[in-house]
Image (cartoon, rainbow, N blue to C red; front, side, top):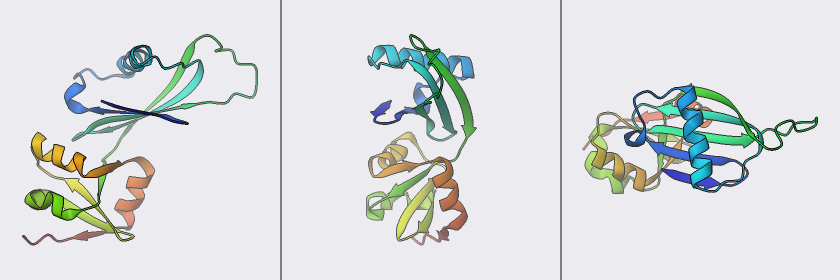
Length: 155
């Protein structure tokens, strides 16, 4: 699991840490457990968008909803959860770092950057990808998929 705090809170959870019965109620319990365990001070109303990828796991984006009226959720956390099936891309900076697994990837080129989509890889190979890339998801990933060129890999 990886946690990034900023204006929004981003939580990256690998599929190895997720249980099979992953429902909206379970995700609310998981988020509240993370808030408690990492001592994150959340009070009020939050929009939670969950991006789920079959190969990676989930990315949870938590953003505070600024209400224009009195904050009825002053001492508690209220979560508006939306789940999205997604297919993540991985922006790779150095194709040489993944040269041994190129046959198992779909490579896309968009605006002088390379993005990869794993096909059938092992956990070790997936670890190599994660070490050498950043995860792209949601609208940005969809835009890249629609506008990118797929490269043919000759190894």
